[in-house]
Image 1 (cartoon, rainbow, N blue to C red):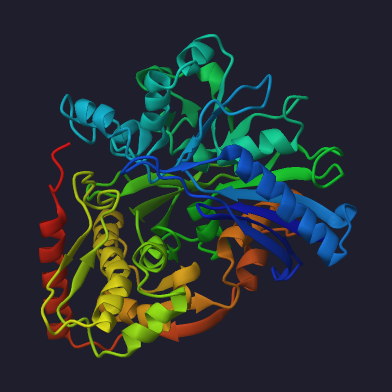
Image 2: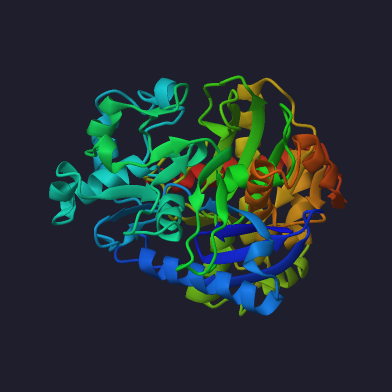
Length: 501
């Protein structure tokens, strides 16, 4: 028997099958289009995502030779905050999905911050007021997209993150599709009470929605959401029984089940999470308080999170928009051609700065350019930008949690870069560890589903599957490290307050 995992990310969708050892035995992945209708706006076509999801599922079934009746259960992990509004009677989206990176809700958020500050909802939601979260994206659609406001007030619209959209379609869509989400995704709306795990009526109205239009909030695993249909891509009824937002899934896939254990995922963005146990720790240093996961009716496990908007997407931008390289690995080779960054610092605030600054007025900035700078120095600055941003979050994480982070587990596409991982260890001054199984986001969703159906029996079983692959130890001298961090902070200040609106 096998466990399936649908991993719906910012740039692509994949379906994977895992065996009892947590090893991937089959996989298919397809990219989807990124839409940028205006500066600071990012959209996806939800229908395209659903079509690509069906295709990767059918590819795996066809190419692996594994029968649907050999799949014990299916987990889903997804890009968080990205929001879809659709008509449940027709299954058609009423607008393109607005992506987590999108800033069009900034005006609404700024007006609310001016009347109460950025932290006015932090005690109830664990989050600062920011256009990053789904609430302002929903409000923008209600206020600006023809027909959505009427559909919401009439109860003729479903509003959900990508997990809800896919589960609804997989379980029948217009013919009885199940409309649910889990606590990790629900926590990203700015509408959920982080202790009661219920929609807050006042906050729902605050963002222009109705509770009847939002999905039912369920646990992350040991909870059955429904079954796939025989008319869908699996052509069989298979339990859908695990949901985790992508970063919580990576934390779970890295077996960070104990308080103080943390991971950093280097994907399109960069996300550092540390398990804080059953203790709800409200951040005082610009981090997010979020559910890490919830098992059935058990007490939830919480985490502190620091989010970076632009990480791997900076490399993609250098490739696709600037044309400096033809492929991502070329950035590594160019960076290795020089000894250091040549005094060049790149602050990739394309969508403002996320944790711990939460400054939507910041914009991307390259500083320290001289006639000495070469392409290799710029390439190194591109990689180092992610390490510096991680250090900013790392410092805030230790202050908030009161627990020293003695090592960092890493995953995601950029964790393949030995240059970046070595520099990350140096700038953090802790060991950085990459696991043997690197598909931790998809693996975390598979673990959640597997626990639900008895494929694995306990967290201890899962922890025993985690194996170290590569470890980097810090050896940068203290004086050099302090000077690099000082110049990074100086570069960050240059990027802030760039836009007036």
